[in-house]
Image 1 (cartoon, rainbow, N blue to C red):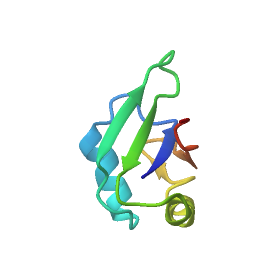
Image 2: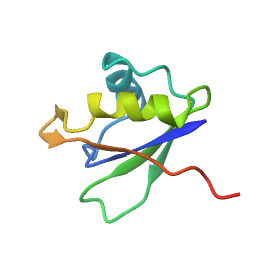
Image 3: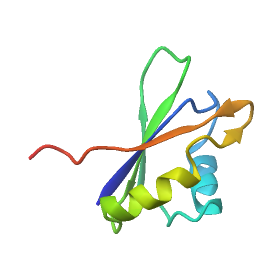
Image 4: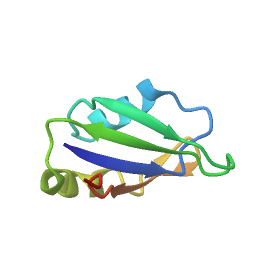
Length: 84
């Protein structure tokens, strides 16, 4: 299991749009999208891929990092594994 941290999302983006963008850029279907609360200026989400390892996600991450959608430049980072 691996997770991708997305930030600077458009405020009104839907989970379906996020999943669609990722799939458009060659990511597999995601299993979960968890929104991260904040002050609303740079909304974020953690996208989880149950059948993907961190190394594979690290190779895919540059495909979406810096993509310009709806007047926002998306930022993407591979999230650290959960602590045991």
